[in-house]
Length: 325
Image 1: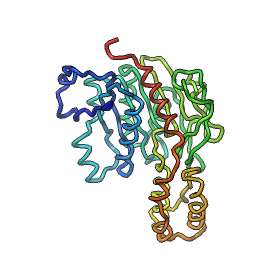
Image 2: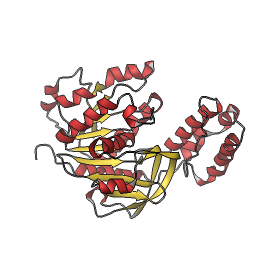
Image 3: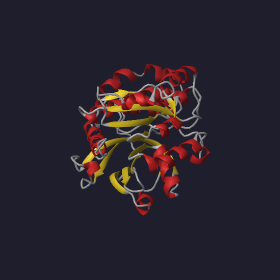
Image 4: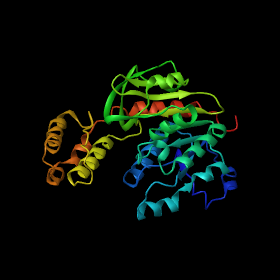
């Protein structure tokens, strides 16, 4: 299996890894900061993408979590068994570091309960990890910590699948078509001009929603920032919408849910849009959500970005020097 899961660092011998005959090409620390509802899916999405992108090469993956993300009993038990604190990463520096996004809990990113731990991890990794890939909120955190670039709140959630322009002259985007599709799902953004001023290269961007992938070399570590979600599976956006609209109709939240653009097959859009308009038009009734065939529609959702995401990750992996070279 190209992605080999390591045991939790708290219970494994670090020397046993180096003693194995089947040494991996890369070791990767995966930091999953998503809330309980998306925790398992996020792990699966990133691991599956790494697996298909790595081909026959082996990645030894070690799973970690920051403290401060609210957890229920089931998720906390799984994390205790299979994940390690981020402090363990420093004991055996990996070749690769992936840090997922997280559900924003505070208007200011610096007020997030895990902020100090995340800052410490990113600052250390900048000097000790050959390459980092940071998704969504963690990408915004890196821009704040490394470059003093602040995110800003969007007027409404950016969610859907959007057309992208690709700078095909970079190693990260080699083999990609000039125009591709990628999903986005976020409530904050960082302006493209701010990234350019900070010395980042814009690898993939959209006229509609701004940059999606940016990168920079130097300071001992290459840095890939992803504001979109190439790891998403076909029904991810629809599942997020189902969660948000359910919270709205059950009065768990009062801000109107946003319908993701192009999140279903063309033949399913009219029915979904009709249900959405009924909800935001005043029919705040859970029966509308219960009656909608989310599962069947999700199974028909297209996945036009999958091969592009695989190529993007394969290019990223190929850019990291092979262990021992």
